[in-house]
Length: 66
Image 1 (tube, rainbow, N blue to C red):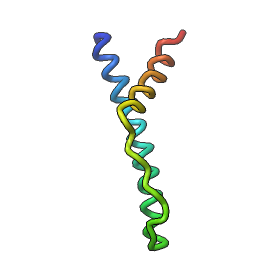
Image 2 (cartoon, one colour):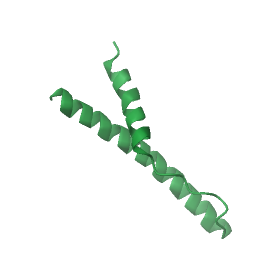
Image 3 (tube, helix red, strand yellow):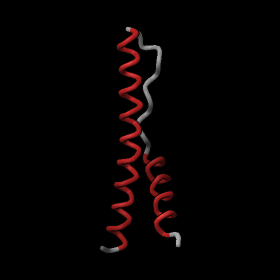
């Protein structure tokens, strides 16, 4: 695996982690709003590119440490 492929894999992992977290939060809010028949709880924002890159940096730092 080349360094470029490794970085892309880390990026994909970061995206997947944040997307999964978003989906869990979104489903919880949707269920609460449906249960109570209201839309009082705001839905979470989808992860931005900056958030994904920040998460990828955290993963890369962990993987690269000795």
